[in-house]
Amino acid sequence: MTMPTTDVKIDELSNEVASTKQLVVQKFGGSSVSDAEGIKRVAQRVVDAQKAGNEVVVVVSAMGDTTDELLDLAAQVTDSAPAREMDMLLSAGERISMALLAMAINKFGASAQSFTGSQAGMITDGIHGKARIIDVDPHRIRTALDKGHIAIVAGFQGMSRTTHEITTLGRGGSDTTAVALAAALEADVCEIYTDVDGIYTADPRVVSTAQKIDRISSEEMLELAASGAKILHLRCVEYARRFGVPLHVRSSFSQKEGTWVIPGAEEKFTIEEGVALEQPIISGVAHDRSEAKVTVVGVPDIPGKAAAIFQVIADAHSNIDMIVQNVSTHGTGRTDISFTLPIVEGADALTALRAAEGKIGFESIEYNENVGKLSLIGAGMRSHPGVSATFFKALSDAGINIDMISTSEIRISVVTSADALDDAVRAIHAAFELDGDSEATVYGGTGR
Ligand code: ASP
Ligand code: MG
Image 1 (cartoon, rainbow, N blue to C red):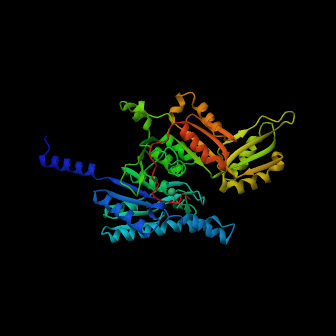
Image 2: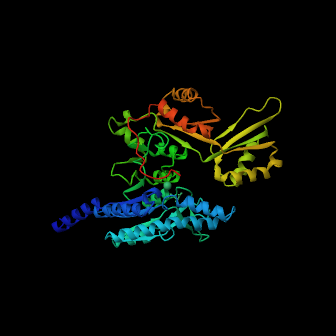
Image 3: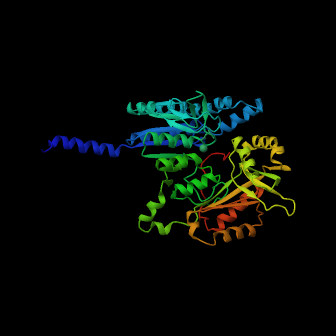
């Protein structure tokens, strides 16, 4: 039986419509919406995206340094803010920008509605300050889009299904909100708008000649984010990789094409003719000042002691990064174990360790916040000998003393003193010939 021709035509037509209409999730960071001007500029951009025929969902961060200012304010009121109230306070920052952006968009003649994280269906666990997203139910967002609205969602926040409390996702968490929504709505792309033109070979605030990267694999981006590159939230990259969401990191201040973070880019690159050959060995240098170094001195060198120490730290909900154990001091049967953890988790971890001092039997604890971590990242390192030699020679030529070293297949990290960190980053960036000819543009933000 032949199909009536009209049906076929309608079918083709709807296919065409379906393929041109894209669902775009756009996330704007704090520096893009730092004042009324910024909010209007972003509103115009969002309206343009809708006019171009897209369905648009926008995720916003708090304006400028609002989150830091709220933290400062809380610290002036108390040194022991209940975690629940801290989340109530911090989640307010994003509510301000979402409402103002919706107003600006409506003023430009398009229609927008703003939603808090819980209204947008961001369901998290109940851990205040670093909640994890466990489910996303964006039916209200879907309905808003179906009615032709632009949906604005407050980033960085959600609600626990068990405690019914408002939670926040941890600093920089709006990126993760955006990707989680993009995945749940099956968006075609998640655009992360920031104050630089994309992901650079180093932080352009430290290395002015850093170069923009056009494409990066999510594997390398994960290492960069885990190593302290603040351009993308670590969990956002993990989430994007897991759900296959293409990420486009770009500036809200320019129209330039930014950096594409491509899930499974390695496979794609190798089948694309010639591209694999051009893959650089090194993708970039990341640095991090947010960690402290803890040394547990005089730990009895017998089985079970490291396990006991790290159990105590885990019970204090601390995220350990680098770990180094020295050979035991001759004849004493004791050793030192050092590790790094986020400064914000330092106090709790120390309290927990001290409480276990008698049980574990170590001699003392040293704690140092005046350290920095530098990491060199590149998938090409796997197959290229000599990378470590170049790396350590560059640090030695620059007169930089190394505290700790750790490596993975595609990363070398060292801990130095905080003061030496910027020089170390510039030395490594230059040694691997990552310096470009022109200066990177930083459009806004205080880098705070
Ligand atoms: N406003 C929050 C912060 O400053 C979340 C974000 O910007 O992504 O960390
Ligand atoms: Mg951010």
